[in-house]
Image (cartoon, rainbow, N blue to C red; front, side, top):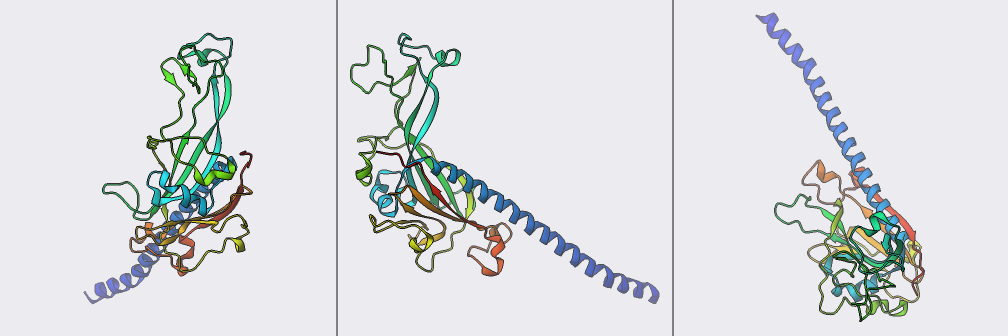
Length: 300
């Protein structure tokens, strides 16, 4: 009996450290997997924003965003706004084609391509609705509204230009709320189409954006962005109390169509639900990226 007890004690002394080791290995693997996945998500979002901004013909700086934010839905959460030219492939029937045009005309015959103006806005949303699939951290979402496609050879029924392309019952009109900007020197005076609300839906680009509040000022000039024409180059996301947070901010030089974008995730909360603030000791679980983008800058 004593021998059995001694054997059990010895076995427990051997097994217990092994169990602790296995648990520690599993925790390490989980941490590394979450870190790697979060870094991939952050890089994918950064690549998307970089490609998007590279097509910009005008980017609003902090002063400009504040000037036009009231024209946009969910205005308090707007961080980045710019104009770009959206490529539309094969939508304008040739001039010798009689109007009206069948709905499938451009599916079976060659039609011309066109570029239309688009207004793009990126948001930082910090509030989570009940039953939402998103985390309690912040997320970045994107809104885009497009101009219509003007038909250079419209049907006779259109007597008041602009006349938009019609393929069957589909008419390529501007999205609700869209209005063309007044000109490069008056971009901060842009207003949505009178009497129309912007109804375009927003798509979430990335979740788990860090909500840690900023503890100091962000100096855009020290980050390589400056412009004597503007007093406010910075546009930064804010929490529900209106305090700026570190997870998503941009420094913009509107004159040179350049933007420095900074993103930071909170992957720690995927492991520990209480890890709601940035922790220097767990920096690897707060992946961050910063990148400079130069747009096309051809808006006149």
